[in-house]
Every structure is written in C-alpha cells, then in structure tokens.
View (tube, helix red, strand yellow):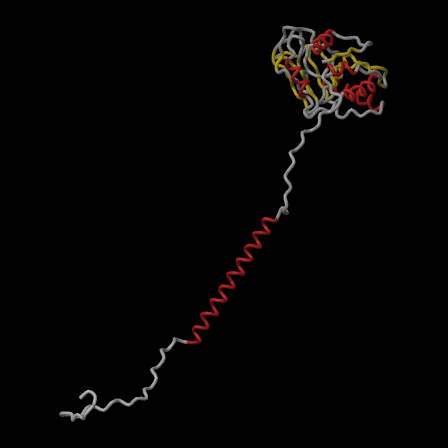
Length: 289
C-alpha cells in the first residue's frame, strides 16, 4: 500500500505505528495519514483517509496508554472495555471514539463538497493500535453498517489487512484518475501516476464479463403452447367428424331393415304327368322304350 504523510502532521506514537503497519501490507491502496483539512474552527487533523480500488475509508487512529490484552468490548454508548477493565485509550477524558470518527467523516465530506467533488459513500473506522505484544480479540467489531472498529499493529496486521480488502465489497470503482482527482479536491495535490499504478490502481475499470450470445429463436416464446392448442383443436374436429359419419351409417342401416333373400321365379313348365300303371306300349323309334 502506498502511504503518504501530510507534511504538517504531528503524529502520535499510535499513528506512527499505523504508518509502519500500512506500509508492509500487500493490499492495493493509498493512505494519506495525518491529513489536515480546513474547518469552520480552523484546521483539523484526520487520522487517515484510505483509498482502495473498491472504496474510500476515513480512519481515526487511537492507541493505548498501557499494555492491555483480552476480550475487546465496544458498545457505542458506553466505555469500551478490555476484559474486566476499562480500555486505557490514549484519548482526552470524556472523548467518545465513535463520535470522533463520525465527526471526521463529516469533515471530509464537507471538504469534498466545498471542492464540488462527489466521492460517493464514505465509510468510517476506528483503528485501535495496541502496544506490541498485547493481543485484543476480536480483531474487528461492526458498530453499524459503514462504521467499524478494527485492531492492528505492525506485529499483528492480519485483521487490518482483511478489513481493508473487504470493507467496501463490490467491483472496483476507483481508478488512478479518480484517485488523483479526489486527492486534489481534498488536499490540493495528487500522487504521481506511476506511484498509483505500483500501488495497484488501474487506469481503467475492468469490463464486466460478457454474457454468451443466445442462439436466435425463430418462434415466439408462446409458439409451443399455440401449436399444442392447434393440435388439440384438429384432433377434436377429426373425432367429431368420425362420430357424425358413424351415426349416419347406423341410421341408414336402421332405416333399410334386414336384407331379404330374393324369391325363386315361378316355373312356366308344367310338371310331367305320372306314367300310367302297367306295361307301356312301345312304338317304333319311341325313346326310353
């Protein structure tokens, strides 16, 4: 990660540890630490403003006055605790870390507005920097969407790296050109293009993956249903036609009745008379005599 420190910044021990931690991260991004911006009351120093290809984060960096290890509890309206004790944070008495980071986000937003630049949504985070050798768990707490508490130092930077790579999910939206424009709007200067390229920013956003072309369909979406309806209609007409023909044939048979056999034609030849009894007198040349 590319880290720039404002020339006018007065860094606390926790902020110097934070700078060392950020510089060893392999995460793509730009961090401006100790940024001084103008307010209605003069100038104010912001812990850090961090750009990644996916988003922009405003941080307030807070250290500890003593070495504390244990379970970290960060209720938004009560004193933060480490284990059974109040967190010994390096803050002025009565300062609320959540209010501090919310105020920092608002001041950065107002500075962008005065420069007529729209950076989109800004996220906020409190970066707790324990003394080396101390362990705080969990390494991240979410107070509300867009506002988190993350723990890290140069010796234990894993949770901080994971947070910076995932606090703004989604596709990349910060190109090196947009980062240069935003830093000019916020500070009046911008890093070199080569530095931003080395830090992992692209000159152009990657094109979204193209969807495979669908083969053209030569029928309407409801053509299959239409064809089914037509088929059923044709079948119904055919069945009705067959029934009508069958009824006509049955009616015709009932009207004609059963077929009668033809009567034998009357004979026109009279039956031969029976032969007379007794011997028959035969005449010469008479047949059958």
